Length: 173
Image 1 (cartoon, rainbow, N blue to C red):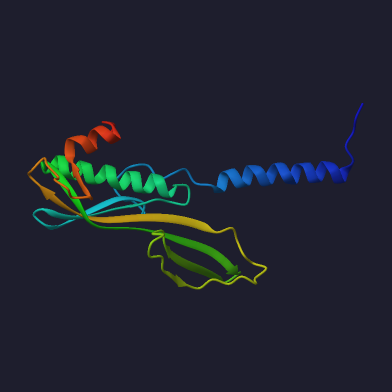
Image 2 (spheres, rainbow, N blue to C red):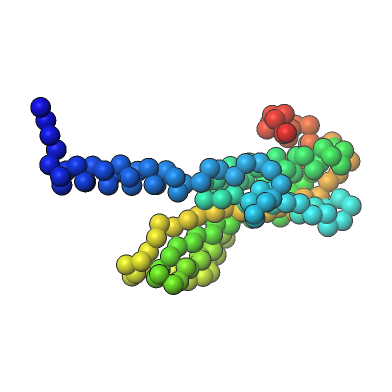
């Protein structure tokens, strides 16, 4: 018969509790839905053929999933407006990192996810015994222009609506 001494038993219980707590603290990825509590998609008509579209994920949502959800929303807007194609006029993905640096202070650090023109702003302390694990949230925003033509010509950031739909599938609802 094998028995564990109290120290080993306590250590085993603490490790198990840490694993369970860690799983409980990791949120489920943000579902594709209209924004609620800051997470999900948003869109705003800037003109008849010009829209600002965004998707913000929680800490459980990867950058790729945020960008895929943004593109899905662009396709849905183009379909709703019966556009033959749409062009991305501007686009940016950002990452916001939040961490606790003291019992009373939470610092927020913003970073562009664009590797060609990164920018950083915020406070980032490295020497603090109170550091929490960083919580990263991605947000992607784009401005799109709709066109009735189903032809993009040589435009690089132009998508034929029907081809864009086929590339992401038809699971929009």
